[in-house]
Length: 108
Image (cartoon, rainbow, N blue to C red; front, top):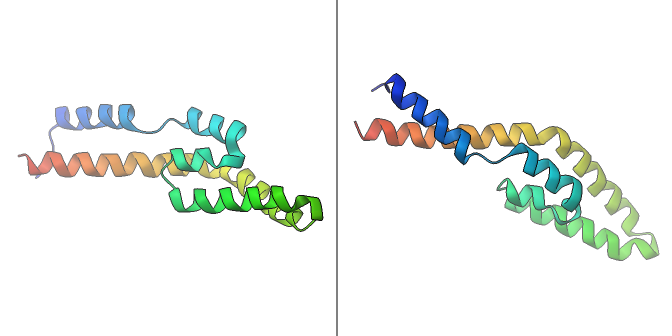
């Protein structure tokens, strides 16, 4: 079954309200990137843990120069995340929209 225009508008309002904020994600990346806070916020738990370990092992081992390559990899990852955040936000919105649409069609 298809949703009415009113139901579609309500779903889009919920998506807008429930989706994660790109501004918050960017602020977390800029100020707490070493803690992978932006990835935790966006629900990417496994990659957040990997980035967290990579960064902090690199910090602790940087005194003996073994950690420098790890820090460079983590830094590159954080730089790439600057460009990946919009896609992660879009995926989050699509998942919310799909969940609400499925719930809306089941209630009919």
